[in-house]
Image 1 (tube, rainbow, N blue to C red):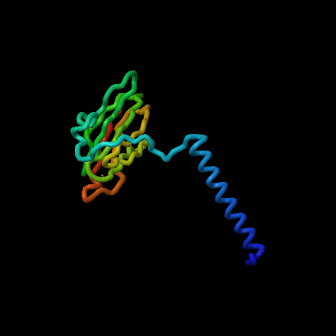
Image 2: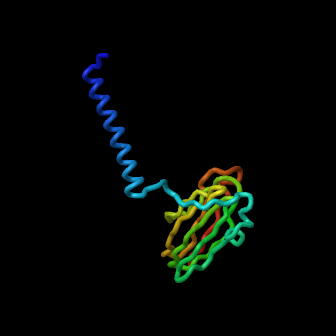
Image 3: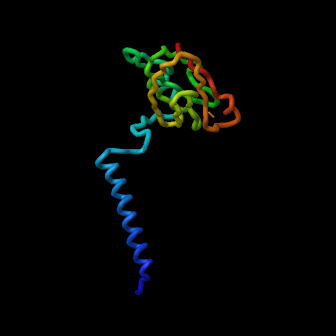
Length: 156
Ligand code: CUA
């Protein structure tokens, strides 16, 4: 079989690139311990969210110091609890799940932008340094009432 010189060059180049990509991926995974975002997800039965602790009592839970857990449930078309009050300066570990379809959990003006996925508890930590009213909204289209799926978080 005769291979043209350029074919050979591209074969070698293509194979080399494949080796480089796999090496980078392997180094990231095994040497640096990287994994897809949102690892260590906690699973939850989406049909029993409201009976499953801690989501049977959603809301803010004091951990210690100025640190809180916020257990939040997204549903068509709202969030539970509907109104969250957070002390200013508090670091809040949000733990969010959905009891029906996929929703968004975005707090406008912050980095909090979580997907609320049925069967999964998603989490994100944020420190509220600025007092005020924050808009919490759903940014995943979830049905006819999607545009009304919003509430506010008061930081004071
Ligand atoms: Cu929930 Cu859009």
